[in-house]
Each structure stands twice: as structure tokens, then as C-alpha cells.
Image (spheres, rainbow, N blue to C red):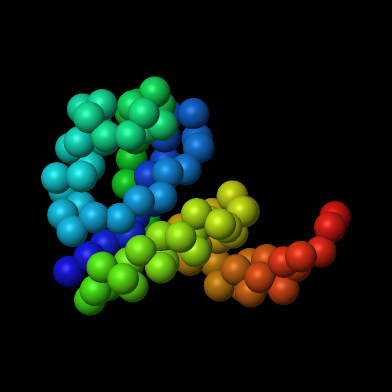
Length: 95
């Protein structure tokens, strides 16, 4: 199995990543052995994960989530499908 996950960092920023072993990857992030981005924002907390059958699916989803706005990621984490739909409809429009 392959996973895509979202971490909330100590500065309330989000980090999106993918892995085959969520537990091991979280340990790496938490010990500062992960990316510099999370290493400078410890502690981090897992707030969302999704499972995929193939690495290709996981990478595709990771790239998709990395392109999302903060508001859209928050709606996903909260399970707010209405907000996700509304935010998707707003894509490409300026406010």
C-alpha cells in the first residue's frame, strides 16, 4: 500500500507527502530526519492520510494536494465536502 498524508506543523503550516510506511515516515519527520521544511517546524502532527494501491496513484494525489490552497486542504481535513465543492468551483477566479 501507498499513502498520502498531511501534517500540521508547529507554525500551523501544512506539509503534504507520500510514503509506504506512515509510522516510519512520521518518526523521521518528528526526529528532524525528514525534509528541512518540517525539521524547522517541529513538532508536526498527522492530520490526514489516504491509502492507494499503487505508487503512481499516490504520487498523482500528492501532486494534486500540493497544488491546493490552504482553505481547500482544511476543508478536506475537516471532511467538509460542501466547502471542497465551493472552493473547486472558485478555481481560476480572483477575489
